[in-house]
Image (cartoon, rainbow, N blue to C red; front, side, top):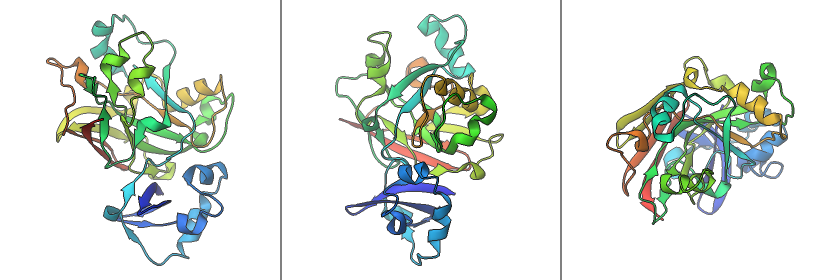
Length: 286
């Protein structure tokens, strides 16, 4: 299934994508499950299909304002320097000698996320706002001390993600959080594809800036794969339905290019994940 959250008028809902139309599943299920996160927490994805027979009308996707697939996520875990290609391009700039031996993780806040079609907002004092095309994994089942061999059973789905970064703020100290949490700086969406929709062997992320390809990544570029990250995080805390794990960005980010290519107002960034969809965000000043 391809699931999404949206707003139509003043009403927020969620539904199932069918080509260019959306089945407003939330109109039937909202009394029990107010949003996709609560649907996942109740392990009630099967009820989505059951509700379709009660709905005759379809909404045009183009008429909807898309929200992040999980508008109210739990913890948003992001993996830094988690691809071999990005490590190679960044190691000289960052004074690194070898890839990390354990995952490098930071957290994002809910207010840093926007859906596809919304603007990413540059802080007005940030001269170096950057894109990072990535793949996000949404957790669908709770887990603690999860072994690698069963970790993927916790996954509810996959979505494109743009880890928009305020580079100057990121490098003000050794802690990257401030540069990764600018208000409305990261794109997430347009949809959440459940695992049955995804061929992990063929999954590929392509990031384009104003139509020009800047990044391309397959999962074999990851230093720590999805299952490894799930297992590692579960060693220290519970993973809960609605948590997000952002896997990492490949080579081609703006600050490593020569000359650097930082984002400007009016730019458009697209993050496509094959077989899932394309996240589209324009850049605006905050």
